[in-house]
Length: 136
Image (cartoon, rainbow, N blue to C red; front, side, top):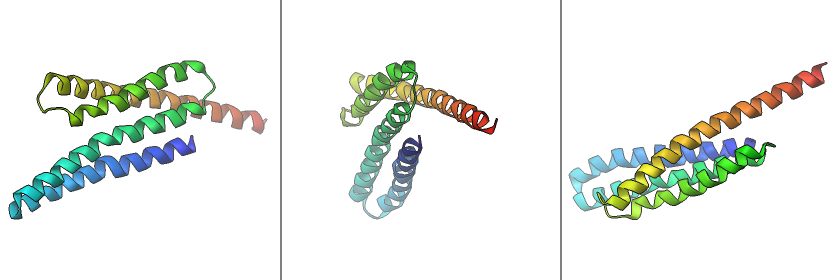
């Protein structure tokens, strides 16, 4: 679980925070040079969208340390779908394919957060049981 937390934190800081910082800076750069500002904004969109790959990796690493098979059966397809649906950033904007992939990516993100919450609850529950067993 510790590896999963580290990967999640790296993905959380490198992905969205870096993308938001680049998006913020690109607005000011557009005042000086419009083309450079647009390219920075586009790279920020790519970085933000590709952070879902980090989150999928963190979810898979977290599920590797759990015993129940029910988590593994749910996590692997969601992680693969979450990663594949990130390809919406390469589609033509405002197309049906881009919209569908974006919505799938959004739903997989919510599913991943929910599953991650259940994995954390399961992990803490087993940790408490282990600690109380050794305390007796």
